[in-house]
View 1 (cartoon, rainbow, N blue to C red):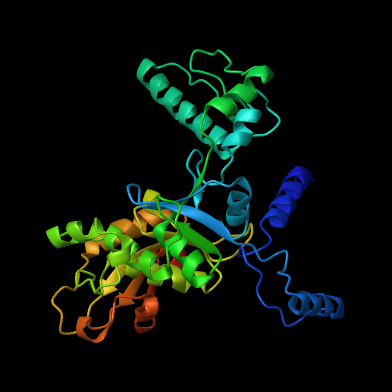
View 2: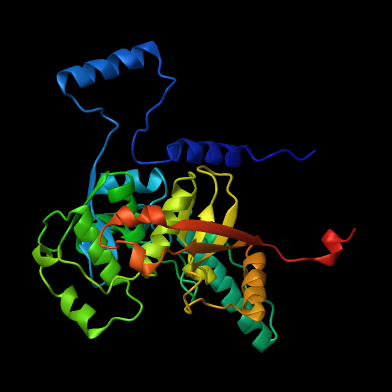
Amino acid sequence: MNTANPKKKRTKKALEKKHKDPLPITLANDSLTWTQYVVNALYNLIGWYHADDQHFSGEYSPEGGFIRITDNLDIQELYCKGFFGKGNLSRSEPTWSQRIAAEGSDSKQFLEHITEARRKQRKATRISKLMNTPPLSSSPSQASQSEDGNNNEVPNNHVNEILDTVFEEHLQLSLVEGFFLAYGLGCLTILNNEKQPLSILECWKLFCNNTLKDRSNDAEVISRVPLTTLQSPMDFIQSDNPFIVKYVVYHYYRSKAWVVKDGIKFGTDYSELNEIGIVLKVFAVIVIPSYHETSNKQENLSWSWILGMNRVCSQANKTLVLCYVNLPPQKTVHLQSPECLTQYSVTELAMKRWIPEKTRG
């Protein structure tokens, strides 16, 4: 009789404990115990802040179009509580320092090791088909080995030197993630290159300008204007601005307590997971702006493109969702501040492949 692997159970339990909090802030809870109520009342009385209420800071990078988080504690808090951002030297979770420290040891395998082993296995399979020889076996534990069979073990006395000489890993937040943390949750302060904090209005106009689809000459000139002059109206911000449209969808799904990640590797805008934790159901979301009835900018999607995207998502075990963002008329909306977000709405359309063997009858 086969039984479940106890090691997997412990691993799953540890991950659930690590990612138990859905957001990097403490939300109000109506079911507080009497002790918690008294402690919170004392904190409010003497002016202390709750220990769980944390605030983060990140630097805006206009060249790369992201927000950089460098503090190690902030990186762990933001990723473990809501899966915000990704490590610039990792696939997703910032584990570069741990991988370097565990180099040459088989005690723990990371996603990067498994990915490298799979790539080597596929390469060996292709070579074996060309040479008509049996393929070489590979496993995640062999991910640290080079192609010639030599082990790339790093002596322990060199680990600290590597950590000191190579720049540390940082967390990269997309513009929509950073704006949600700053505007939606109010737990992030975004700094410019001079380490000066940016206001919500400055962030809004900078991010809208950074993600323009067609950057006109006027937009290029305005992008070089100092932040102090950005309070004047900027007519180049349209209701279909890519940042506004994508942020509307991001804020919509985050408000439903869903994890929202970038879906570029699947050819979509977002890859969303509808639960915080280990048991996840993944959707691939394509954001489509829906213009006013009198507009002629409506994008017509061909059936061949939709069927192709649906098949790609099905092969990756993801449900394709077409998320239409209903845009307000350009003349009736004030786009110079995030207050215009209340005039946007979202319509979802989930698509699944019709397979006769599964749906017949």
